[in-house]
Image 1 (tube, helix red, strand yellow):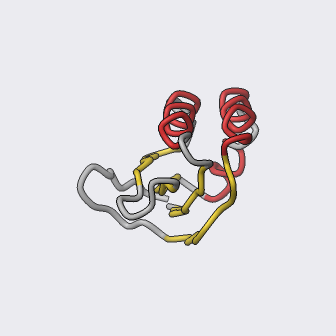
Image 2: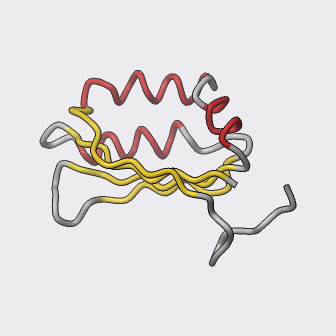
Length: 101
């Protein structure tokens, strides 16, 4: 499996807008085991996105999906930058079914 954890910085007053866009535009992505959007409790202008995919290739392919492209276009004007980004190799846990590779 392939995982990503990343921080997104948002223009003041638009965090909830971007969260809604991301949650709506990413509801159904083939190969996605988990897509979590979380508010940063210490920064009112930041969100964290935690993703788990079947593979890095499935993640890359998701970026070409029409719904994902539309979400990116809609959110882009409110995104001021990106913070930390970590790639991981998920192995399991609560809510995450493991599959044979």
